[in-house]
Image 1 (cartoon, rainbow, N blue to C red):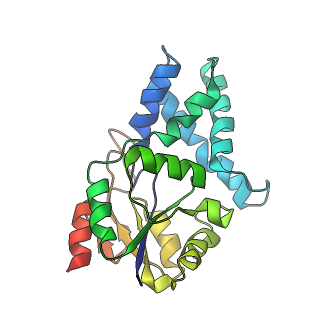
Image 2 (cartoon, rainbow, N blue to C red; image 1 turned 60 degrees about the vertical axis):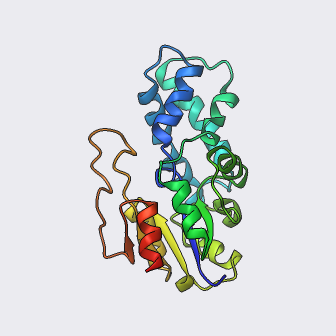
Image 3 (cartoon, rainbow, N blue to C red; image 1 turned 90 degrees about the horizontal axis):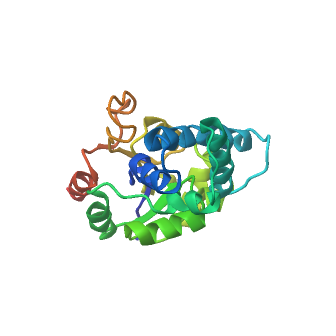
Length: 226
């Protein structure tokens, strides 16, 4: 196949917030599970930024998540009996309802793969849990760096032996698409207004005239097929 779609995963393909909160409630009873999940996720970008800027060598997101979990637990004043078990919450994230059928429809005529900051191991296990029909696993684990560094998108394109113009980045985050477009990739925006819960104010609408703007993955597949 001479075309491909690569996907952001956290937020775009899966509902990380309520999925992680479910696991937090199971492992840390009595804590505000949604607040804990949100705070844990809040450590995500600063941890990656130290690697992006050269302050630390590359380590997989699994390691960063575990370190961030310990930091979050300290902030909440709780003791974790099995932090490694709770850390596996990121391998058990529920997909948005349109994702699996939309991926299957897109896959009929193109290669599909995640372009996520998640590790290869994490993305593989998440795919089995959520039944994502990826053709391969791409992203940070291949590039040994984190989005939005150009290397992550370009390594994914190169792994597929395609040109940037033949690969479309799909994301619910305008910043992700802007980074991909700057490198010559096509772009598709699919909003996820429930990613951050009630009152979300970010990424509710496209910030640019992306190649495709769709209400969900099913709609994207229909538009692409026209």
